[in-house]
Image (cartoon, rainbow, N blue to C red; front, side, top):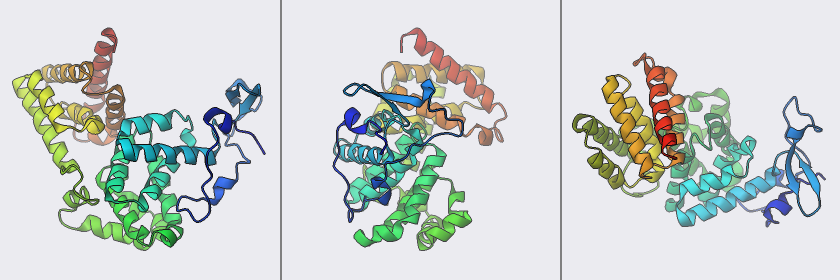
Length: 341
């Protein structure tokens, strides 16, 4: 069997036994390496890690899929205690296995099924915070697809798994990390059956957005749509008043550091059709929030990536969207770089 170096690099981990909701028959099969079509085992690029104890070059992904799954479970369990989504994202990114990131969605949701509403709310928030830095659109789609494929197995240990998964699906669509078209895909509709139908029913109800933001209970009492409105209001007020101190105070009062990528995104969207002076004013605010460490580098990058993925759609109403985005991003990065940020 191929030695992927996992035990040496990260230490031996306890196996997930059959009967555990997290068990996957693939976990017992480590005898493979994922490679691209032009992979050359003799090239330098093929050597991903070095085993200091045995002086061996380890070829292939840094971790086998089974070990990656165990590390994700460990990271999520720690997240349930700390509630630090950014730290969980950082830990998983450091595993350096982007080809497995769809498993983050599958493992996080699966792990929460036999927990309480608090953990399910934390998973929904984590998935939103991890998008798009850790999870891209394909990862999210594939992760939920895999969950739908094994929902019957999940129900053996968690009888309410179908209902819970339907809620996770609907919540992901409301949080804009999964497109509504996912539920219309013929394969998804076929494999998901009643789970997909239930998610559609939930989304079709009146005021579903407000309810779905509280689908796992009250949480912090504030729905994401409400947060977005508050962010829009403070950004517009700032453009009128120019009061950066007041704007920073309002951002801090929201107490949602894991959601600051949305603030960055909305700040840029707000000035897509504004004057050059207003665009410069928004640049100054973003820079100030980053310099004062209100907005972290991780959240700033996530915000830029999120809006970049939406530019084609935004350009339909704001033809200058690409130009304005590049201007704001380059100005922010340049000013932060000059101050050593």
